[in-house]
Image (cartoon, rainbow over all chains, first blue to last red):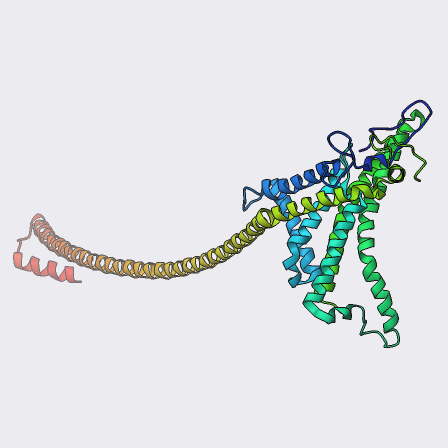
Length: 252
Length: 184
């Protein structure tokens, strides 16, 4: 997304770092309704396509000695499977497909967003909030279904002194309900900030005097963004596993 | 933030508030939320569907299969190793047996050779003894012959000497004299 509109000549520098996040219809320019095919649709579809490419097309050989694509798919599978097993416990493995879905979607959305001129779906709070709320609601429902009222033990720290427990309960309660907020804003904020910074550097690259510096800065930030793209997907996934563990085994 | 960057967004200039917010942070333009959420849910369901129907069972199957193959191969290797060890033992045993056998054969051969040798030596000794006895006999005969010849020659010589010296040759006296002399 970097570089499509730097300085627009005339009255000096005009940088629009946030333009890249605008949701607009793909065909024509009417209002954005619920079912309008927008750039969001396109890039979500591309993410789905990438998942299919990795997990279906690349693994179609089912080789004992894997091809390159298949070994990447196996790596992703093993990585998340082990994470779920280690963090959520063995009974968390039942929810492995959900977590794998989240991880693959975020990772591909993040990396697709790093393609110049692309639209980054995970930079939108609407998208990450849905992901985080889905996790939050799943945890809450699962916790009560699996443990009944014992799920509330999550807020009643029985290892603390009795006098402290009400205070801790309030803190735990707040932290529990803040989870979806931090969970979603962490991802969207990281991705959005990185992409906006890239855009700002790209804008400055149009000024001859600072162009080399701006370009070096862009390369550096881009490298950082590649790292962030993966790390944020990883963080989102591992936090999901942690929350899932709370639902399955409440109490400390 | 909202008013810093004037943005030309085509179309709906009427929705001023949304427009203003969109100009600053498109993330907070709530009018696009239903659209994003709708498509996101479709995308997530699509990914979930792809993964649970095809992707995950396949990869899981491949991994399990590989694990199985590796386990089988390790077991097979273990068995082969065991077999190799057995074979080595059998080889060692065969080698030891062969050595013992060879030792026996060598001993037998030695004994055989010794027997033959002894026999040959005995036979040679016998032959030598026979030969030497024969030679002795012939030497004795020769000696006897020689003595007889000497006696004869002595008698004849004595007779001739007596005749030449003018005596009468008394054969009997000469014989006695020669015999006495030969014994002396």
